[in-house]
Each structure stands twice: as structure tokens, then as C-alpha cells.
Length: 294
Image (cartoon, rainbow, N blue to C red; front, side):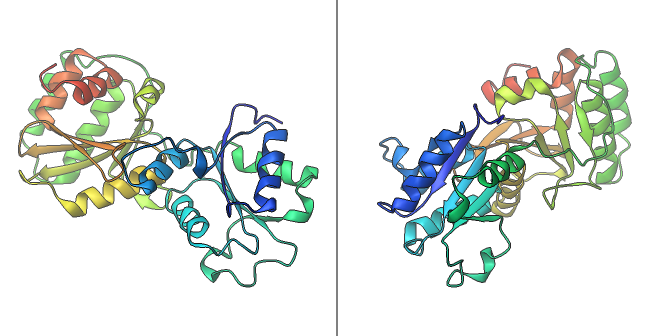
């Protein structure tokens, strides 16, 4: 098994022998197991602690036994589904006839085969990296824009439509060392204007980097935009989004609901000036850290 360093979050009724069996078996096949009981003491609401643990998991195993209809396991199962974590349900011997039909299409395996290779193979399949199904605009190379920034800024002066800013930004990101996809693709079924990858963004929790492009951003936060970006970040399994706009207020960073995800708002001209002197990962790092570090 190639799962020795993978993290697994187990959802199940407290005190249920089936949950204990699943935890033991997960450890046997090399998974680093956490449960809701591993959440550290905190003043924040319990759901936030659960979110933090679940976001760090490579896989969620839900134990759907006769006690599984108690409120907390069902809530945790809902969180795992909303966060788009790879998920498998361990079902009781009699199946799941009394469970909501909304989860009937999720991967499942019977408790009867828990100790067999069938369970280990199912876990391995879910832990395989998902293929990147997005058409790439560029190949990565770490560089700064240099004098090319002047050409981009000059071309942006004649922009008439938002889609033209999409094109310029995709070109700038590609030049600065990122793999970029365009609006025609989606992240797990949700649409993003641009999505950028770079290995050096991983340590920032920003790989991939979700990007929204706007002609104008108001001074006050937009709840609808925040909701949309939060959904995109959860679907992509990342924690940083970038909103780039032609007109609007200066740089700012907003935290989203779970306290771990952030949205960086930055004007087009300011972003290009930063990219003039450094590649995308260093620019994102500076935006997250210090608004004046141009």
C-alpha cells in the first residue's frame, strides 16, 4: 500500500464497536487516523474545529452502522460531502435502507469485508491523485515580468470588456511562472475565471490559486462573491483566492467563514507592478503578508 503518509478522518457514532474496528483497520493499512475527538480544545465553535481536521484529511471514512443516524455523525458526513473530500461509507451487513437517498450514490463498502484486501484496494483507489483534466495555457517557468509589464499595462488601457482582462491576466500569470487554465474549464463542477498552479504556491495553501476577474470591485465586501469563492476553494481543496480588478479600492485580504481561507483583493496595475519584480508565488506571499511590500 502507498498510503503510509496519508491522513484519514473517520466519522462514526461514539462508542460504536464498528467505528473502533474501522479505525483499527485504517491504522493497519498505514493511514494516519484522526477523529472528531482529536480536535484540540478551543473557544471556536465545534464545527470549525471539525472543518480544520477534515480539510487536512486526504480521505474520509464514514461508518454507517445502526447508530449512524445520531446527529453528529450525520453532520460530519454532510461536512465531508460539502468539502468534497474523497469519501467512502462503511455500511452495516444489512445495507443502508434507512439512510437518506441523497447519499445513496456515494462510494461504499460492507463492514463484512473490512479485514479483506477489498477494503484496502478501495482506499487506495480513492487516494490516487485525481488526474488534472484542465487544458493548460502554459508550462511553468519561474520568472518576473520585467519590461513586459509595461506592455501589459499599456494594452490594459484600451480594455472594453472584462474578458479582455481575463486574457491579459492569463498571459501575465503564464509569464510569471504558473500553469493557467481559462474560464472554459471548471473546478469540480464549479466555474472559476482563472485557475493557476505552481509548486511553490503549495506551502501558502494556494495551489491551485483560484482567481476571479472583475472590471470593478466596491468598497464594501460582497457576501455573494464571498460565498461563491468559498465554494470554489472547498471544491479545489485550497485556501487562497485572488480577485483582480481594474477599478476599486486598494489591496485588502478578507477571511472567509472557516477562518482558514482568505481572499486577496488587488488592483490590476498593482498586481502587474509586483509581478514585474518577482514570480507569482513570491507575489502571493507578499500580498498575504504585507500590503506595502511591492
